[in-house]
Image (cartoon, rainbow, N blue to C red; front, side, top):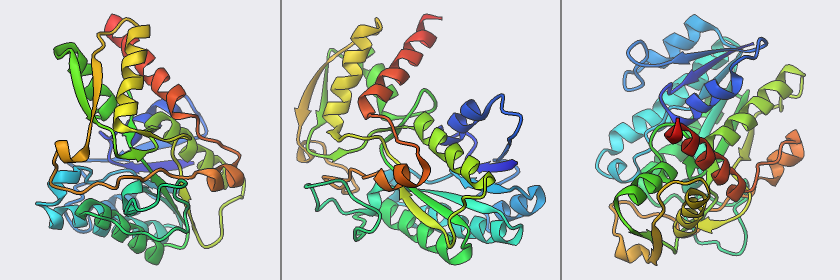
Length: 298
């Protein structure tokens, strides 16, 4: 089966390439610049119509949460309009589309349990609103879809919070990190495994009729500060520089975009329907830091 992935330089695209490497039953191709420019209407659709994949994985996104407040048009173009175009083109070639969405479609008012797929959405900023609009356009354009909401992605690839904390610890003995925003830190490698689990299920004839929305995030809940502390603990174990982590409030670290104070995701529906259960966030953090430590030592 041919998979066409948008966003070739992103964490999920690189993780998919890593996890699918060596599989003879999958042909993974990437729709990327300069040939494919999501800022240009019709560009991603032309690539899909040319490649005629069985599955489109729309992993490309405008993810700069703060910058989106100053560039709402660009965020909407990349996260909403391009997603709808990709879904429509996928429908034309009878392909399934996997649309990657975010926990930031929720407003954070809940803190008694992680959000489920049928909980009311209420994005607080441009980024979350643009991703929610993308969900809606995908649903309208292609009934053969799976929308996967994930959260707080990190990996050995690209730029992300875990790698930033490791780099910061090499330069500073003390790190101050927000401790009143809680969510579900998720390894992009685990998310790639989940996506490939869906692809394998569809190849076996288990495609959901009429599309589906799933939450796919690591189990467990922590704060950004808790995540940073876990990263430092793993750094100590694997011989990397580690810093002291001190908690601060969101008010002590002002940002242009308002973040939800609680956006943890409940992934039990995905586990029940696919048999794939996302690992606990602590185990996955350890795995990624171990890999980064090995690369540093090489």
